[in-house]
Length: 167
Image (tube, rainbow, N blue to C red; front, side, top):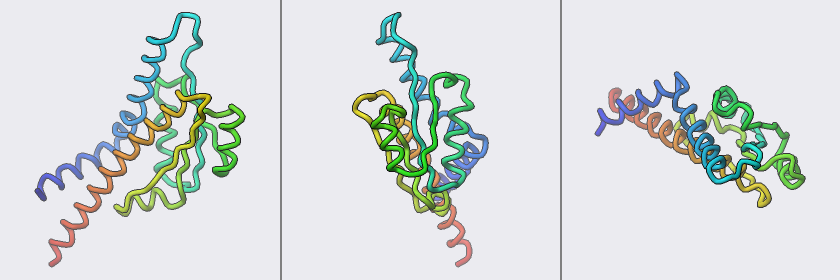
């Protein structure tokens, strides 16, 4: 089992370094949502657009890379917009006013917690009036959660492998 965890941890680390894991985690759900939007909508319907608020109490690598990868994806140009908000109350007010369809709240210490192998929790705020933005935000968070769980497992496996070598 140990060799499998070590190989898996190295593969995950390589994917996180070259950005493909985050790109796949963000692009795939949004592209699928866009295709379904076009397939289910009529010719007169406007193209899919979603504004997602970001509350970044973490100020770390993870929230910044999520936004950078999503905005850098060719498939998402003109579809997805991120808006920063200073706190959860401001994001909720923006959702209630229709300025944003959903918001993702990254807590303080999120990047450090993930890097230490402790995992982390992200909150999604949604509007009943714009369910598509909520679906996209939840899908992004689900993918982020999968990456965090994989990274946490890799860190824990690496730490355990390092501890066993010393004893």
